[in-house]
Image (tube, rainbow, N blue to C red; front, side):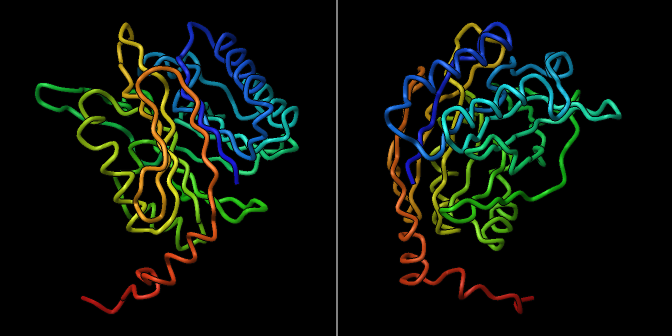
Length: 267
């Protein structure tokens, strides 16, 4: 399975962000990716005050544009995340996934909101304007089952384990770590989750913008079921291409049967 991760700058407007995505997909067209991934809040400033302003209902203008892109380029599109508003006015940090025909095949609302106050470092409180989701998300492809979670969700190992128990061999993580949490935990968390669950992890960030109120870490990466970093970008815009051998998942799980040896009788 050929995967391309697009690490893109968040543009000034939603329209500019969508057009930049289309231009990037055109640029990589000849690489014939099966799956393309983009970052968290890819066309919305990562600011709590912006989330309600940029929020759209499922099926809205951005959703339609992304669906059309998936169909136009014949790809699975993990469309980062965007603010979603429901009929009751609640706003979520939502990831949509579209298949090669442009059909939505998955939707994940960020389950663990990023509420932190790190002394001398990052302060952020998503719950000021966002509502937490309450689901574990796994979807089917011709390559096998794939799971998806969003950024801070990665820190909670139970969610990853649930996805794997539901058959996931690859886990997608649109994310936006920062300059406090990124250097400390970005690679560490992805490698640890990959080793624990013996599957591929793809962390896709937005590119760093030093002038933004929230400065993303970048460093989109792909990690193998053995915990190897197969590829990683820097802080700037970039394209990361990976060919995933999903047979490696079963081989490693057979040779080192951690999941099969899991005990539920320990008290």
